Length: 188
Image (tube, rainbow, N blue to C red; front, side, top):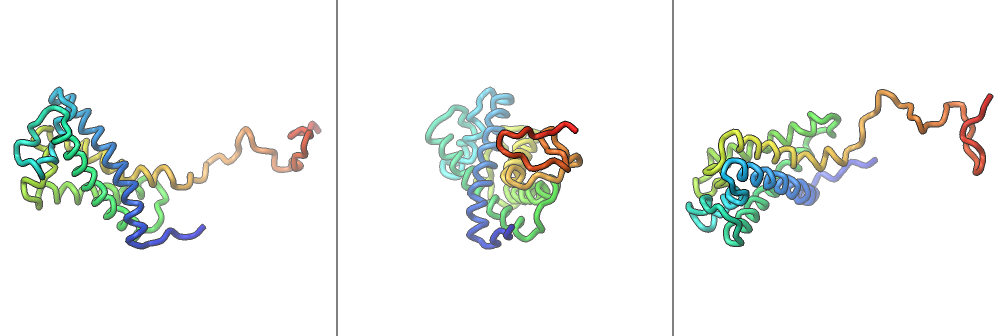
């Protein structure tokens, strides 16, 4: 099997996929947590629209094209941005052999996103949903984002070698190759 290309182009293409997955799952988490904490599922998704509409945007509770669609578009673009960084980081690491080695760069990227979002970004360019959700909900949202980044790798990587290689469908080691119409197992 050939090594995947380690170029910016391949990181961007992979980032589009993993960023989309991370964006969708974290938006679902935002909606569920918004419904649980605020009674409004669109409220946290509206948060990022403060980039365009200003400080009042995160406090819009209802779904609207103006706030929710723009909020999701900004969240999606930021997710793809961070996913490209994640994919480039993964290119620098050896192939992932375990779930932990898949999750580690996703968690590192998500931690970097959190630090940049809340400690280096001007207030107007923060995600906005932090104005409406609890700290524990923010942790859940960023956790689902990390899982979303890693999801594509977790689902497409080769399965590990099983401890038990025998299967109920496997032929006995000394079985003759099966011919059409011949039984698979012979009585001795």
